[in-house]
Length: 338
Image (cartoon, rainbow, N blue to C red; front, side, top):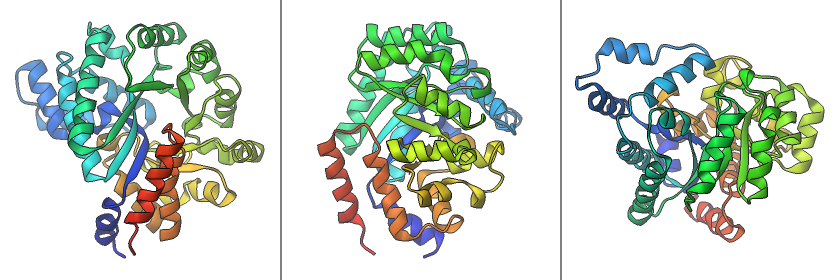
Protein backbone atom coordinates (compact mmCIF):
# COMPACT_ATOMS: atom_id res chain seq x y z
CA UNK A 1 0.00 0.00 0.00
CA UNK A 2 1.55 3.33 -1.06
CA UNK A 3 1.10 6.61 0.81
CA UNK A 4 -1.85 7.80 -1.25
CA UNK A 5 -3.69 4.49 -0.90
CA UNK A 6 -2.89 4.35 2.83
CA UNK A 7 -4.23 7.86 3.49
CA UNK A 8 -7.34 7.28 1.37
CA UNK A 9 -8.09 4.09 3.28
CA UNK A 10 -7.39 5.52 6.73
CA UNK A 11 -9.30 8.74 6.12
CA UNK A 12 -12.50 6.65 6.00
CA UNK A 13 -11.78 5.03 9.38
CA UNK A 14 -13.12 6.89 12.47
CA UNK A 15 -10.29 8.26 14.58
CA UNK A 16 -9.66 10.32 17.69
CA UNK A 17 -6.91 12.84 18.37
CA UNK A 18 -5.98 13.65 21.96
CA UNK A 19 -2.99 16.00 21.70
CA UNK A 20 -3.89 18.92 19.47
CA UNK A 21 -3.51 22.66 20.11
CA UNK A 22 -6.43 24.81 18.95
CA UNK A 23 -4.37 27.70 17.61
CA UNK A 24 -2.19 25.29 15.63
CA UNK A 25 -4.91 23.83 13.41
CA UNK A 26 -5.24 27.15 11.61
CA UNK A 27 -3.94 27.14 8.03
CA UNK A 28 -1.69 29.72 6.38
CA UNK A 29 -4.85 31.14 4.82
CA UNK A 30 -6.40 31.53 8.27
CA UNK A 31 -3.27 33.18 9.63
CA UNK A 32 -3.38 35.69 6.77
CA UNK A 33 -7.00 36.50 7.68
CA UNK A 34 -6.04 37.13 11.31
CA UNK A 35 -3.12 39.29 10.20
CA UNK A 36 -5.24 41.41 7.88
CA UNK A 37 -7.95 41.84 10.53
CA UNK A 38 -5.30 42.95 13.02
CA UNK A 39 -3.11 45.21 10.91
CA UNK A 40 -5.34 46.19 8.01
CA UNK A 41 -2.88 45.01 5.36
CA UNK A 42 -1.72 41.80 3.69
CA UNK A 43 0.92 39.64 5.30
CA UNK A 44 4.12 39.65 3.23
CA UNK A 45 5.96 36.50 2.17
CA UNK A 46 8.92 37.65 4.26
CA UNK A 47 6.74 37.93 7.37
CA UNK A 48 5.25 34.52 6.68
CA UNK A 49 8.71 33.00 6.26
CA UNK A 50 9.95 34.64 9.46
CA UNK A 51 6.94 33.36 11.40
CA UNK A 52 7.87 29.77 10.60
CA UNK A 53 11.65 30.18 10.95
CA UNK A 54 12.52 28.31 14.14
CA UNK A 55 14.66 25.31 14.94
CA UNK A 56 13.93 24.45 18.54
CA UNK A 57 11.04 24.18 21.00
CA UNK A 58 11.46 27.69 22.41
CA UNK A 59 11.55 29.22 18.93
CA UNK A 60 8.36 27.38 18.07
CA UNK A 61 6.68 28.63 21.26
CA UNK A 62 7.59 32.22 20.32
CA UNK A 63 5.95 31.76 16.89
CA UNK A 64 2.92 30.22 18.60
CA UNK A 65 2.65 33.34 20.78
CA UNK A 66 3.05 35.60 17.71
CA UNK A 67 0.03 33.98 16.07
CA UNK A 68 -1.97 34.41 19.26
CA UNK A 69 -0.95 38.08 19.13
CA UNK A 70 -2.60 38.45 15.71
CA UNK A 71 -6.09 38.03 17.16
CA UNK A 72 -8.07 41.28 17.13
CA UNK A 73 -11.10 40.12 19.10
CA UNK A 74 -12.81 37.01 20.42
CA UNK A 75 -14.61 36.76 17.08
CA UNK A 76 -11.33 35.62 15.52
CA UNK A 77 -11.86 32.31 17.31
CA UNK A 78 -14.65 31.68 14.80
CA UNK A 79 -11.99 31.52 12.07
CA UNK A 80 -9.97 29.05 14.13
CA UNK A 81 -12.91 26.76 14.82
CA UNK A 82 -13.84 26.79 11.13
CA UNK A 83 -10.28 25.65 10.40
CA UNK A 84 -10.53 23.01 13.13
CA UNK A 85 -13.69 21.66 11.53
CA UNK A 86 -11.97 21.32 8.15
CA UNK A 87 -8.98 19.58 9.73
CA UNK A 88 -11.14 17.08 11.61
CA UNK A 89 -13.21 16.22 8.53
CA UNK A 90 -10.15 15.85 6.29
CA UNK A 91 -8.54 13.42 8.72
CA UNK A 92 -11.64 11.39 9.54
CA UNK A 93 -11.54 12.43 13.20
CA UNK A 94 -14.82 11.83 14.99
CA UNK A 95 -13.68 12.72 18.51
CA UNK A 96 -10.99 15.06 19.75
CA UNK A 97 -9.69 16.65 22.93
CA UNK A 98 -8.14 20.01 22.06
CA UNK A 99 -5.90 22.26 24.14
CA UNK A 100 -6.66 25.96 24.32
CA UNK A 101 -4.32 28.42 26.05
CA UNK A 102 -6.14 31.51 27.40
CA UNK A 103 -3.25 33.47 28.97
CA UNK A 104 -2.09 35.47 25.95
CA UNK A 105 -5.68 36.43 25.09
CA UNK A 106 -6.47 37.45 28.66
CA UNK A 107 -3.37 39.66 28.65
CA UNK A 108 -4.70 41.25 25.44
CA UNK A 109 -7.91 42.16 27.26
CA UNK A 110 -10.21 39.44 25.94
CA UNK A 111 -12.87 38.32 28.42
CA UNK A 112 -12.75 34.63 29.26
CA UNK A 113 -16.54 34.34 29.38
CA UNK A 114 -16.77 35.78 25.85
CA UNK A 115 -14.21 33.28 24.57
CA UNK A 116 -15.94 30.22 25.98
CA UNK A 117 -19.32 31.40 24.71
CA UNK A 118 -17.93 31.34 21.15
CA UNK A 119 -16.19 28.00 21.84
CA UNK A 120 -19.50 26.45 22.87
CA UNK A 121 -21.40 27.89 19.89
CA UNK A 122 -18.84 26.63 17.37
CA UNK A 123 -18.41 23.21 19.01
CA UNK A 124 -22.19 22.74 19.04
CA UNK A 125 -22.36 23.60 15.33
CA UNK A 126 -19.56 21.15 14.49
CA UNK A 127 -21.45 18.43 16.36
CA UNK A 128 -24.74 19.28 14.65
CA UNK A 129 -23.25 19.62 11.17
CA UNK A 130 -20.58 16.89 11.21
CA UNK A 131 -21.42 14.57 14.09
CA UNK A 132 -17.94 15.23 15.49
CA UNK A 133 -17.42 15.59 19.24
CA UNK A 134 -14.95 18.27 20.34
CA UNK A 135 -13.88 18.54 23.98
CA UNK A 136 -11.46 21.12 25.35
CA UNK A 137 -8.60 21.02 27.85
CA UNK A 138 -7.42 24.33 29.27
CA UNK A 139 -3.67 24.71 29.00
CA UNK A 140 -3.07 26.51 32.31
CA UNK A 141 0.50 27.06 30.98
CA UNK A 142 3.84 26.71 32.72
CA UNK A 143 5.19 29.67 30.69
CA UNK A 144 3.78 32.30 33.06
CA UNK A 145 4.16 30.63 36.47
CA UNK A 146 1.92 28.85 38.96
CA UNK A 147 0.05 31.95 40.16
CA UNK A 148 -1.09 32.67 36.60
CA UNK A 149 -1.99 29.01 36.09
CA UNK A 150 -4.22 29.12 39.16
CA UNK A 151 -5.89 32.31 37.87
CA UNK A 152 -6.66 30.51 34.63
CA UNK A 153 -8.09 27.54 36.49
CA UNK A 154 -10.26 29.80 38.65
CA UNK A 155 -11.78 31.26 35.47
CA UNK A 156 -12.58 27.74 34.31
CA UNK A 157 -14.52 27.25 37.54
CA UNK A 158 -16.12 30.69 37.58
CA UNK A 159 -17.51 30.37 34.06
CA UNK A 160 -18.46 26.70 33.57
CA UNK A 161 -18.57 25.32 30.04
CA UNK A 162 -19.71 21.77 29.36
CA UNK A 163 -17.19 21.45 26.54
CA UNK A 164 -14.17 21.99 28.83
CA UNK A 165 -13.39 18.76 30.62
CA UNK A 166 -9.99 19.36 32.19
CA UNK A 167 -6.60 21.04 32.28
CA UNK A 168 -3.19 20.53 30.70
CA UNK A 169 0.30 21.89 31.26
CA UNK A 170 2.02 23.13 28.10
CA UNK A 171 4.75 25.67 27.45
CA UNK A 172 8.52 25.57 27.90
CA UNK A 173 9.08 22.43 29.98
CA UNK A 174 12.64 23.32 31.06
CA UNK A 175 11.46 26.66 32.47
CA UNK A 176 8.45 25.32 34.34
CA UNK A 177 9.04 22.15 36.37
CA UNK A 178 5.84 20.15 36.65
CA UNK A 179 5.90 19.82 40.43
CA UNK A 180 5.55 23.61 40.80
CA UNK A 181 1.99 23.30 39.48
CA UNK A 182 0.82 20.71 42.00
CA UNK A 183 -1.60 23.12 43.75
CA UNK A 184 -3.49 23.76 40.50
CA UNK A 185 -3.72 20.06 39.70
CA UNK A 186 -4.76 19.06 43.20
CA UNK A 187 -7.65 21.52 43.04
CA UNK A 188 -8.70 20.52 39.52
CA UNK A 189 -8.78 16.83 40.35
CA UNK A 190 -10.63 17.54 43.58
CA UNK A 191 -13.22 19.46 41.57
CA UNK A 192 -13.70 16.53 39.19
CA UNK A 193 -11.77 17.79 36.18
CA UNK A 194 -9.45 15.65 34.06
CA UNK A 195 -5.72 16.37 34.19
CA UNK A 196 -2.98 15.82 31.62
CA UNK A 197 0.53 17.23 31.32
CA UNK A 198 3.24 17.76 28.72
CA UNK A 199 6.30 16.02 30.13
CA UNK A 200 9.39 14.26 28.87
CA UNK A 201 9.37 16.26 25.65
CA UNK A 202 12.33 18.54 26.28
CA UNK A 203 13.43 17.37 29.75
CA UNK A 204 14.52 14.00 31.12
CA UNK A 205 12.36 11.30 32.72
CA UNK A 206 12.32 13.19 36.02
CA UNK A 207 9.73 15.52 34.49
CA UNK A 208 7.44 12.55 33.81
CA UNK A 209 7.98 11.23 37.32
CA UNK A 210 7.00 14.64 38.72
CA UNK A 211 3.89 14.72 36.54
CA UNK A 212 2.92 11.34 37.97
CA UNK A 213 3.84 11.95 41.61
CA UNK A 214 2.93 15.62 42.04
CA UNK A 215 0.32 16.31 39.36
CA UNK A 216 -1.30 12.85 39.27
CA UNK A 217 -1.61 13.32 35.51
CA UNK A 218 -4.03 10.96 33.79
CA UNK A 219 -2.15 11.13 30.48
CA UNK A 220 1.35 12.25 29.54
CA UNK A 221 1.91 14.48 26.52
CA UNK A 222 4.99 13.41 24.51
CA UNK A 223 6.71 11.38 27.24
CA UNK A 224 9.58 10.35 24.97
CA UNK A 225 12.34 10.58 27.60
CA UNK A 226 10.70 7.66 29.40
CA UNK A 227 12.89 5.57 27.08
CA UNK A 228 15.84 6.60 29.27
CA UNK A 229 14.35 5.06 32.41
CA UNK A 230 13.46 1.37 32.49
CA UNK A 231 11.78 1.69 35.90
CA UNK A 232 9.58 4.50 34.59
CA UNK A 233 8.52 2.46 31.57
CA UNK A 234 7.55 -0.39 33.88
CA UNK A 235 5.53 2.05 36.01
CA UNK A 236 3.72 3.42 32.96
CA UNK A 237 2.96 -0.10 31.76
CA UNK A 238 1.77 -1.24 35.20
CA UNK A 239 -0.49 1.77 35.77
CA UNK A 240 -1.64 1.89 32.12
CA UNK A 241 -0.83 5.60 31.94
CA UNK A 242 -1.38 6.70 28.32
CA UNK A 243 1.32 8.56 26.42
CA UNK A 244 0.27 11.04 23.74
CA UNK A 245 2.82 10.50 20.96
CA UNK A 246 3.66 13.31 18.50
CA UNK A 247 6.33 11.94 16.14
CA UNK A 248 6.88 14.84 13.72
CA UNK A 249 6.83 17.36 16.56
CA UNK A 250 9.46 15.40 18.50
CA UNK A 251 11.59 14.96 15.38
CA UNK A 252 11.45 18.70 14.74
CA UNK A 253 12.71 19.71 18.19
CA UNK A 254 15.55 17.17 17.86
CA UNK A 255 16.04 17.22 21.61
CA UNK A 256 15.71 13.45 21.90
CA UNK A 257 14.79 12.17 18.45
CA UNK A 258 16.69 13.07 15.29
CA UNK A 259 14.76 10.97 12.76
CA UNK A 260 11.27 9.48 12.73
CA UNK A 261 12.64 5.95 12.43
CA UNK A 262 14.41 6.42 15.78
CA UNK A 263 11.30 7.55 17.67
CA UNK A 264 10.76 5.51 20.87
CA UNK A 265 7.06 4.89 20.12
CA UNK A 266 8.07 1.62 18.47
CA UNK A 267 9.87 0.48 21.62
CA UNK A 268 7.06 1.74 23.85
CA UNK A 269 4.46 -0.20 21.88
CA UNK A 270 6.55 -3.37 21.84
CA UNK A 271 7.00 -3.14 25.63
CA UNK A 272 3.23 -2.86 26.10
CA UNK A 273 3.05 0.81 27.07
CA UNK A 274 -0.28 2.49 26.21
CA UNK A 275 0.35 4.97 23.38
CA UNK A 276 -1.81 7.02 21.03
CA UNK A 277 -0.85 9.00 17.91
CA UNK A 278 -1.25 12.77 17.48
CA UNK A 279 0.00 15.80 15.55
CA UNK A 280 0.48 18.37 18.35
CA UNK A 281 0.59 21.43 16.06
CA UNK A 282 -0.30 20.65 12.41
CA UNK A 283 0.41 24.05 10.86
CA UNK A 284 3.76 24.48 12.61
CA UNK A 285 5.07 21.02 11.78
CA UNK A 286 3.37 20.69 8.37
CA UNK A 287 1.67 17.42 9.27
CA UNK A 288 -1.76 15.81 9.68
CA UNK A 289 -3.00 12.86 11.70
CA UNK A 290 -3.05 10.77 8.53
CA UNK A 291 0.60 11.69 7.94
CA UNK A 292 1.53 10.63 11.48
CA UNK A 293 -0.01 7.19 10.98
CA UNK A 294 1.81 6.87 7.66
CA UNK A 295 5.09 7.58 9.46
CA UNK A 296 4.22 4.80 11.92
CA UNK A 297 3.65 2.41 9.03
CA UNK A 298 6.50 3.45 6.71
CA UNK A 299 9.30 4.51 9.06
CA UNK A 300 8.52 2.57 12.22
CA UNK A 301 7.27 -0.66 10.66
CA UNK A 302 3.88 -0.78 12.33
CA UNK A 303 1.78 -3.40 10.55
CA UNK A 304 -1.76 -2.55 9.46
CA UNK A 305 -3.10 -4.59 12.38
CA UNK A 306 -0.93 -2.52 14.72
CA UNK A 307 -2.10 0.69 13.04
CA UNK A 308 -5.66 -0.44 13.70
CA UNK A 309 -4.77 -1.01 17.36
CA UNK A 310 -3.22 2.47 17.59
CA UNK A 311 -6.38 3.99 16.11
CA UNK A 312 -8.46 2.18 18.72
CA UNK A 313 -6.07 3.32 21.46
CA UNK A 314 -6.96 6.95 20.81
CA UNK A 315 -10.57 6.16 21.70
CA UNK A 316 -9.71 3.80 24.55
CA UNK A 317 -7.31 6.31 26.13
CA UNK A 318 -9.64 9.29 25.76
CA UNK A 319 -11.92 10.77 28.41
CA UNK A 320 -15.03 9.47 26.66
CA UNK A 321 -17.52 7.44 28.69
CA UNK A 322 -16.91 3.70 28.68
CA UNK A 323 -20.08 3.16 26.65
CA UNK A 324 -18.96 5.68 24.03
CA UNK A 325 -15.50 4.11 23.89
CA UNK A 326 -17.01 0.74 23.07
CA UNK A 327 -19.14 2.26 20.30
CA UNK A 328 -16.14 4.09 18.88
CA UNK A 329 -13.92 1.01 18.89
CA UNK A 330 -16.68 -0.94 17.14
CA UNK A 331 -16.91 1.80 14.52
CA UNK A 332 -13.22 1.25 13.75
CA UNK A 333 -13.79 -2.48 13.29
CA UNK A 334 -16.81 -1.81 11.06
CA UNK A 335 -14.86 0.59 8.83
CA UNK A 336 -11.65 -1.47 8.64
CA UNK A 337 -12.19 -3.21 5.32
CA UNK A 338 -8.88 -4.52 3.95
